[in-house]
Image (cartoon, rainbow, N blue to C red):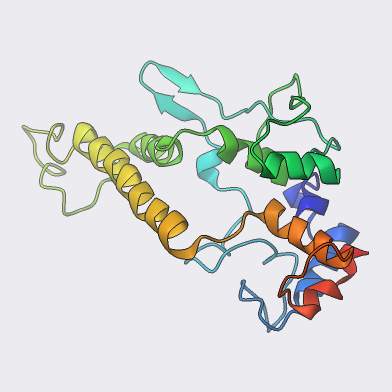
Length: 231
């Protein structure tokens, strides 16, 4: 994923590196990501097994459509990092950050805001977003469709004299959506820090490097150690 962070999502089908990544992941016996006919393809690459995740383009329309925000409309053009500039690429920089030190260089940002188009852009979105941002903005987009976005079971939908607001209306919906986002974070943080405690990608990458140079011993699957990605 790090190798193709600057490849536009629309080029996944034709880019040689994404093709090689899909081919390589197909060889891993324990890979449990989505596949097509038992193989990872450029269309399933880096997607999830969640329902609907394989439908449509890589970037959700909720990250592309304008957001109605009160009297203002927000165009979803974001400040993103400059392409082809990678960080924490030396061993000592990696080790310092693992030990809690700050990065030695500042993130260089593109002066032109743009729509999310590649993995680096998407990574910066989740780097800077607030806890309720994605859920809130998606809800605002849906509410912008008016009655077409409302369930037929809504008691105010066909009323001639009333409309929902505090109950079964905008205030009610936005409260539930943002409240659910916080509750989901509580459950996620419990799983993340008290149950699974999985290594961060850069920490696992350091384990692979230390194993390859003989600086440490780790129980890492031989399939990964034999992968072309480490060449």
